[in-house]
Image 1: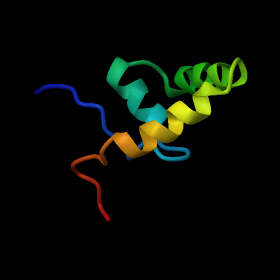
Image 2: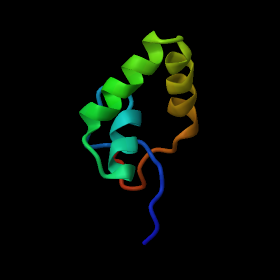
Image 3: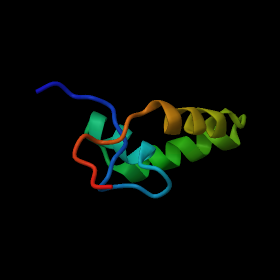
Image 4: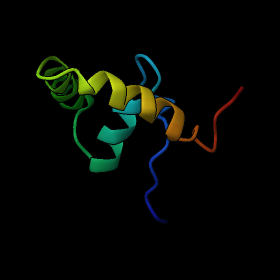
Length: 65
């Protein structure tokens, strides 16, 4: 089974982007959220990157709507 980036349904705070990146790289989601926060405060591009990721990353295949 191949790994795919898609929004996390189990570990989501805003939209599941950081949780998915953490699952993909098999690291703790807190580390990803802290890194994203630092990235945001150092130049502001983190906000734009997060918004883009919210729209680009698909929902998980087993999402219940």
